[in-house]
Amino acid sequence: MGIGPNTDSRWGDTRPSYGTVAASHANQMRNLLDEAPGERAVLALFAELVRSNGEGPVADVGCGPGRITACLHQLSTGAFGIDDVRPPRRSGDLR
Image 1 (tube, one colour):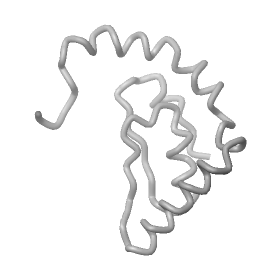
Image 2: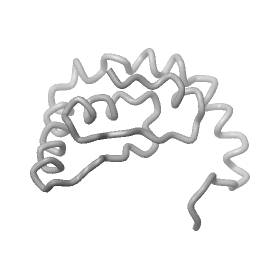
Image 3: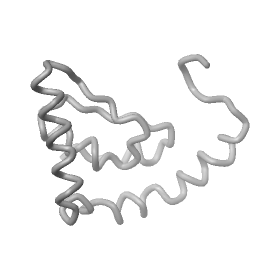
Image 4: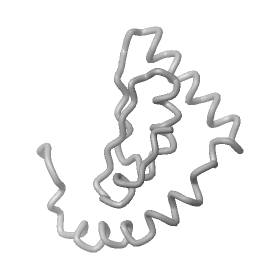
């Protein structure tokens, strides 16, 4: 298992299918954290642990449209997102 793009053959079909729904998925998920106080509280606790231990930045691997990444970034964790599917990576929003 090395670092770099996954060349496993099953990804040949998966990437394009994720890419076709990426924009609509991002739109549906855009304000989800506004309606999920429990999830926001868990992210705030995680961010506090990161900051209090002098850790960071935080990598959100498989971030999709970046809603969790944006929340963690706003909580001063230095968060950044990585996703192998190109459309979500391009449409991510660090508000």
